[in-house]
Image (cartoon, rainbow, N blue to C red):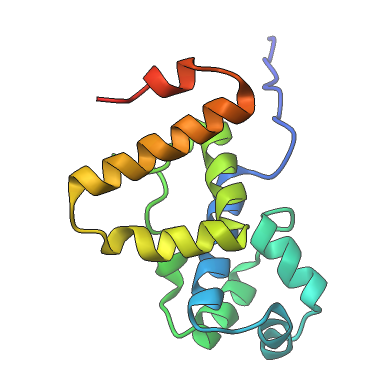
Length: 149
């Protein structure tokens, strides 16, 4: 009997990235520092950094402590993972890009303010602007055509 071995992709698991990003977003939303969260759950701020980056998995008991401290149900950290129209767990590159975006102060600011723009046309213009800037940086005009409509 032969068994096939799946090659384990390098880097954090997409689910760990998702949960870590949700922890970071909620912590930042509440205005807490990593150090404050760390003190509240009995770990170092470096450990909180690893949780938020997805490099260290969060145990169930620690996630419960984090949820309590951040005043959300534990299920909050799972919301949006693998749902239609959201991040696809079978596309880890997309999950990692979203996580990298949310790990920057600019990403957090955009994620907090973008949904407040009610005009779909204005939101589309912002997306097109970002794509054109990315294309300039990459020297690749094909980025512009990918989803512009």
